[in-house]
Image (cartoon, rainbow, N blue to C red; front, side, top):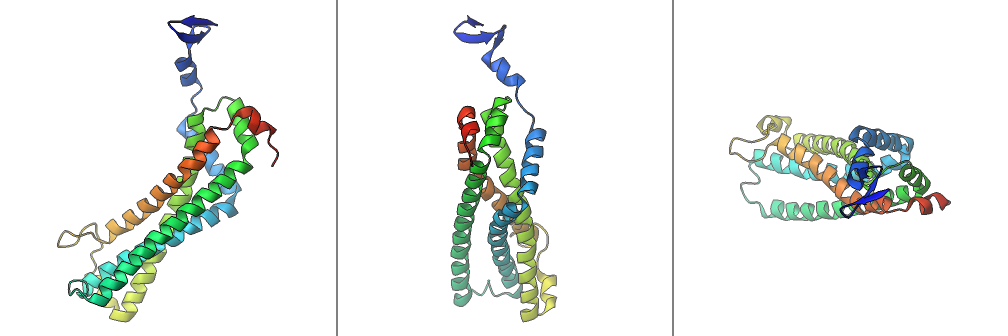
Length: 226
């Protein structure tokens, strides 16, 4: 072991070179994350259900707006419609806040249960960024599946409700593409935005638990009994 220009070297290798050689690939992080999602399927489903409910409500509101524009209700500036839309928007915000709290709680519990596993991975050479990457991938997977299912169910419920109320011929007036005739957002734009919102919320909510897991000391984690 020597020092070279103020940098610690081991057998001629700098610290940066050593770190670069023990970097684990994204594929390995994805494989481990997927395994944890499937092993703890019950907890994963509970976490994904909070995302599902929030995104389904968001997509239902978006589909309602498209249906209102198709019937001309939105252009008329109906005060009752505007008031209801404002209430729904606040409900969506509240729902996403509750969803974020649920994701943080579930992942913090997951970190606590996996102290020894995280300590073992660190002893085997896993770096902090790999631990963070693993938890963020896990959160994004739950967010993606929950958001996709929520967007589909929310859109279907509102489309059927609007069809029963206004007639199913209304569906032909809805812009199903990314943009409508006037350049406004279409159905696909709202659909993808709802999914991205759910995935983004999941990843952001996972940052704090992932950081906590990454900062665990290997020796302390291995001594922990759950």
